[in-house]
Image (cartoon, rainbow, N blue to C red; front, side):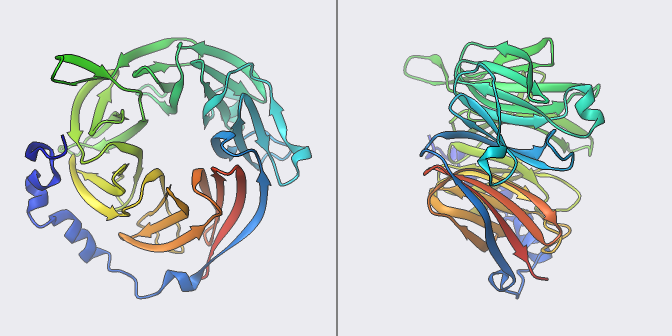
Length: 370
């Protein structure tokens, strides 16, 4: 339980010590005297309306299109995969996948030809537990794991081979490549004290990361959360350790927050707060006091070349932008945002793609006047 002294933030010895790391961070990065509201403006480029709650997944990236340099918007609408090139729906590319309702989309150059041409392939996961690899608008292969896919992440392993990692509703994480399953593991919580039985929860988040250990050696982990107040660190299917958190985790990302030299782990929790993990210790970072469902970081050079900006969505109409622990801008939308993606169009322009629960797909630009 959250009330247990053993698991509260206040019991963390380093945090009791006047939040040393966070205080040092505040002293290093002083809050800007410039109001970002005065130098930031936004404009809507175009919108597209779909049925409410119909878009289940969104990704944005470079894929094979009419122009090699084009960025495509990839969405899952029911069991249909759509590649959107611009505001004109006549230019949409529907991809036949023979899948159930699409729940996850991930982009990564997997097929050698894609890697050579510096474009991404598409990996989707559906409600039936099926994972499909799509390259150049054709389905190359499928894996079926039997239950709804909740997350897909793609990385390179220690020998530089592509590794696809998927989690499902039954609490299992699967690691595989284009042809073989490498390993799988079920995340079990031994917290059912009344029946003395392990409990299995659906996997909420997974994220492959590389961080430095106490000996300054870069180490790879898979972060896992499963709607409990724990964050798990896994390697090759084995749990190495876990960190207790104050509230179940909704979203995980990494970014340069405390230092430009290292990537910090950020977690957004159901209690409306964002926490940071530094040297494997948990610290409170930002209190939104609003439910958070998605969080990303991005470096915007016109704001800072060293520290990342944190962007989050949740049960509020828009996106909130945080820098140096302060809310610097709110991008307003007509409804709660279900999913979003961002990329730098140039050093002063951030392209924003949002999907609202009312079914609106919106493409906008955030412009920073230096």
